[in-house]
Length: 294
Length: 241
Image (tube, rainbow over all chains, first blue to last red; front, side, top):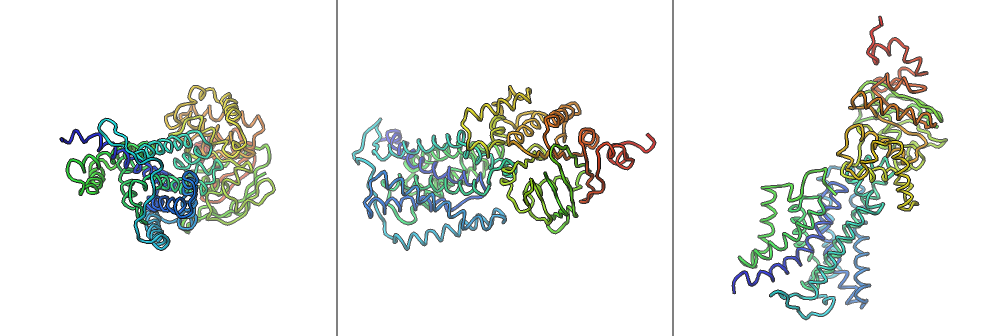
């Protein structure tokens, strides 16, 4: 069989991981827009989402939907705590110092996960049946469809939140001009707290929906998260539409590349794309500079 | 309404304000004039709670607000329209105006908020057709109108305008000043900060002159406008004329 015959399969699996990258990239964007920093604990939000799902679903035996919701809530709270305990006390510092703080907190969080959940690999069941569906020559698992659906809902809900809701608009206003937002009565500290909480929720969703089709470990989010970061750069760092497009594009390029060359080089392909973007067009696909940030 | 006592402000150890005391009474329009770098914007940012490296007391509506956060001050009705407009450029005119009503809009329905925007736009007919346009794409004069409108949406008890005429063509400046006059007729309390001393003095009731961090003169605007030193230094008149 030629590569072309496999193309539908590559695209489906690319869009699946691409959806995860997109959600993670959105988390990076939201915090970047609120604070100007890159928050590396984003990768651990993804791990924690998966780990919480494992514990709630399998150890505590909660129903799927309840476990899903509680896992998202837990990581949302952790996101807020990261801001409150690690970022806010140091907020007057330079951006680069804050970024280093997030790297430190990320390592700390991973250590805590290792103590709590151990180093073993774990498995989480699929949300529904594991019987594959064949579609245009591609084999699709129901879990793939769950990933597409949940990502779609998350992206639409986020768009609605930022364009319609009072708090969402205030968060956007704060990202464009924090001083002016403060003069409108916006509590800027609270908006930054919300941005960490929201990014925690997005990371959690990404982790929860991907773990059934991958193996779960305490550091599952690291590689996914770094590729989510690459996707955010590819789309134009800080641009949320770019984050979604960048995520899906990176997923597909990586999957097709791995199919054409060799799956051994999957990670190399993703990070080569990141380097290419940084060399050729550092502002990314949709990066127009500061005025176009969401 | 607003009383400031011996306010000093610092930037990395450099003193920008050296013991400023002033007050604004209810219903008054007070202008604060002075050249570039005199400390006018610093003074406003101290009052608004944005500049925190400072000493001295600030009282607003009988409350000590020296340590209040910016959002607490907006809640009390102390609203600043900042220098250079500082609009939310990528957001629409309507969204900018809605942001002005941010603290009040928590208790409003979407319909009520839209009505408030409608009512505000009656004051600025030029903006009516621009409602859905991104604020950053407007002309300077229109942007200044949005900035003032956004401030008014906060329902201020005291409106502080920082250089509303900055960078605008003379005809547009006239238009902005006539908007301020209209607000004055409606009984708004205004603290107007201006480099355009003539424009500010000719519409305000009282005025202060700020020079390198100190208030060097104060009194009725009509007195200041006739003062020889002010005429020479700030109004561009020679002593002879």
